[in-house]
Each structure stands twice: as structure tokens, then as C-alpha cells.
Image (tube, helix red, strand yellow):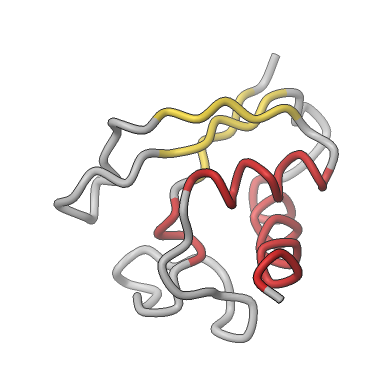
Length: 92
């Protein structure tokens, strides 16, 4: 089973691409949480496991990550883009 790890920094509007953001600024949100990301992952149709004590390699504070399970046939970039689209909807 393939497991993709998704960090909040991937979706953080306050970060630049070199600081870890992986989505365009129009899809990014301010200070995303692992709980919001987990909800978006479930909306996309995958299982999410939240790890709260992990730190992204480009950051100093531990914000955690979400492990997305069952993504055998999906590219990570496509997954991140889909999650970002749902994050925007959840914030509205």
C-alpha cells in the first residue's frame, strides 16, 4: 500500500515555493492545520492518518503531517492539488 505524506507547509500561503509551498498562491490558505488537511483528504476519497509531532524538514516548529493511504494510482502532485482545492472550500 502506498502512503503519501502531506505537510501543512505545502498549502501555506505565507510561504514561498522555496520554503516548501507546493500549490499556487490562489489555492494556498493561511496557516493550514493537519485537521483541516485530514478533512480535505477524506473529501477527496482517501484515508488520512494524522501525526501531530512531526516537523517538515524546511521548518523549525512541529506542525505535524497527514499520511494519505491508498494512493496507488495517484501522483503526489495531483493529490496535493486536489487537497488544496478542498481546503479552500472548507475555509469558506
